[in-house]
Length: 140
Image (cartoon, rainbow, N blue to C red; front, side, top):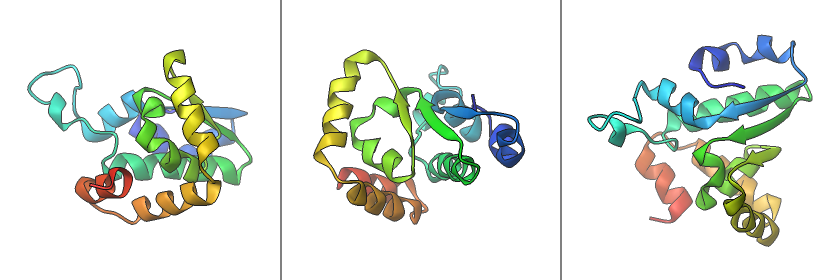
């Protein structure tokens, strides 16, 4: 389970020792941003769509696939309908989520072409602000 920035920084070394990996997005986001999502004073700063988080996830997936490793993702991000295509476009192999979200995510995957997911991913990964990323994903 990749849940810390330190693990993401040495992902090339970790991959040599494993058969597959899962990205724990809740903790990874919290630790990258140094924001306690349970603390009311700072929890509003917690956002898994910030460029540092998205680019870390992409780096992990990219490095894992270079070594033919399977990548799954768990945490709240896996169940965000609007982020499904972004994650697919980044090469994610599997989503792990509460079963109540499965029909919605499955429907999004079935309705879209991988080419569309790749296009969204490429566009999002070029952005350097949360506002621009949200515009790409949510058409704001």
